[in-house]
Length: 490
RNA sequence: GCGGGUGUAACUCAGUUGGUAGAGUAUCGGCUUCCCAAGCCGGUUGUCGCGGGUUCGAGUCCCGUCACCCGCUCCA
Figure 1 (tube, chains in turn brown, blue):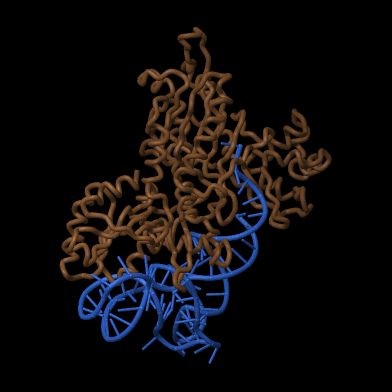
Figure 2 (cartoon, chains in turn purple, yellow):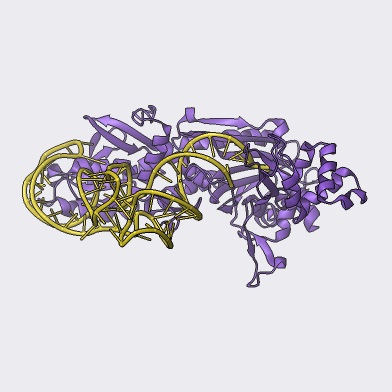
């Protein structure tokens, strides 16, 4: 009866759905805007009482699925890392492209690739206008032009003289802006450029640099993985779509180290395991798909890459990436650190740098996908019932305890049940208002079970359990409650 | 970053040509209620996003700014 009808049946359009969820998230304490009383902070969100439970459950299920295995170890690396890490990883080089926009035609250009779009004749003419002495200096026209573009003082004037390659207008460029996606901060109390370090833009590097530590201390042999959950930070140009693109986010990553030649096999295996994880927690299968990266668009480190995408109301969006990173990362860290990152295979007696299969899921994005996927509006007796059909393992509150009326000894029995269950299960006690209203309140926050104490309870020590999705009730003895619920939550 | 839209109670929204801010829902306290947002009585809730300006007077007009949404762009 877990029917998966289109959740937009009542919502007027897709945008309404996100807005309703954002509203519900705030009203019921899932997600608040960061620093809200100060007007908010762009792209930052706080998890409220129910949100933190849902997020914790998502992470816990991931942790169990990924590390309760013989071949995967856990790790929790520091957010701050040695600056050389980000040189080795390629982030320093690749995260700092100055960009300009044409105010006229709205085209955007990377300054470092702008030179390719300008004709030689035009370059010469523009340089002559700006500073004729440059032309007589050594070097090719390309080099001179690029040098001017990179010069912080001269590039501004150069850009004023250049026509936009797309629309031809002059003087329509914005100032060049550096989009450095890594957050900078300072190690130590002195704001000295020598002390610049970064907030990690991904958790992966913390795993790579600990490869030898974990291998040596855990006595693992290839193939094996290292898993980590943690915050990462990217100074995104645009934040967008609620929790989907934020500047601070949480990743759930597992890097699987394997022998070259076996990498494709492991890549395929982890692809299947990872999409099945989302399915096993109730995510609608038709809203999940792989999006394989075309070979010509792969990142510099990858041999193969795919995204697990979820169909959000605003379209398909990546919730997890699975990449074959080859020996790029360990190779680079070996090169930059000077420390050997090879693995010695006892059986074949050969040494090699392991290949890495990466599974990198967004905890915040998964949170949002599970939240959006669970949201339904249903017609019940002419009224709209809004309900979050979370998998019981993910539900923030597992069960509510409701005395049908506040008299005849029912509250006393209900309170006794509450105190018996509370050490084991996240529960909620509610005696306010009509029971129908209480059921609906629990539906709205996704509580899978409601335990109701009624007159019959007083006679025979049984209670009803009302199931969220079907609204059907069964009656069981109070003494069986914990067993019953535990089985359902397992 | 550009363009467009929106910011008024916890939520959804009214608010007239500028004249001391409202509704529904929610929430809280009662009464009533034996199973799906029922009813009755009463109570609480506001930096009108923020800052300036115009004005005797600004939620309303102007400027700036912040945040959110949509589109473009971006997303090693």
